[in-house]
Structures are given as C-alpha cells and as structure tokens.
Length: 156
Image (tube, rainbow, N blue to C red):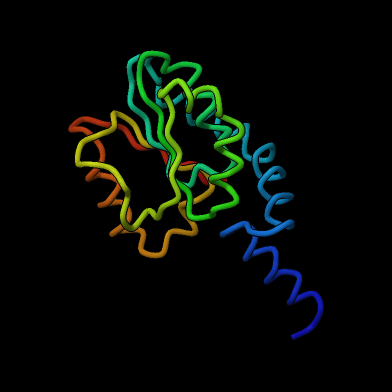
C-alpha cells in the first residue's frame, strides 16, 4: 500500500469514527464543514419549541446546539459512535446538558439507547453513508420516532 492509499485510509477512518489527537482535529473541522447542511436540514424539519429531537451521529454537537436554541421547551438528544465526538458535543452543549434539556450518549444507530416513540424528529447529517445496515438502521430510527414524526437525512 502506497503513501497516498494510507492517507486515504486514515482520512476514511477518522471521518467514520474520529479518535485520538487527529480525531479532535477532524471533529472540529467537520463541525464547520457540515454546518450549512445542518442549518438547511433544521430549517426543513421545522423544529418547534416543544419538540423532542434526536441527532444520530451527532459529531461535535453543532446540530444539537442549534436545535436546542429552538426547542427551548423540548428535549434534544445526540448519539455518536465516537467517544471523542461525544466529549466534544458535551463540551459544546455543557449549559444545556446541565439544564437537563440536552443529553448526549455514546451509542450506535443499530441499537439506539431510547424508548419506542420518544422523538418527534430525528436528524442525521453526513452520517448515513457510514451506517452499516441502512435498512435495519432506518427501522431502528423509526422505532424511536413518534407516529407522524419526521426524519431528515442530510448527505452532500
């Protein structure tokens, strides 16, 4: 394997599951790179003040912060596969977490750590292409959504 192949493999690994010092850098970089798509998806979802919203693959918590500013009487949760991203999201949303309006957990889209029909809306930006079994994973997302809920998958 040549140098270019190793670099591409390393980038793929870090975008899929950021870790270590390089993961910290990738996490912050992806936060700003994905922000326009996140804002667009939130607008389309028409988040309301009392909504309960889940961010699957929440990364460093940018979407959570933006949604929590709208869902001021609701609840916003995030799940991410990367411990590094969970820590960044917790730091970015520390005040809302302390207030009990936001919760961020380490987890996997295959087994979301929430009860059936817990959320009005679910968002996943730039994560769907990493889901290991998209059909089963969408069924899991559907399980945690309330009847009539809305799911926004943002992929560039």
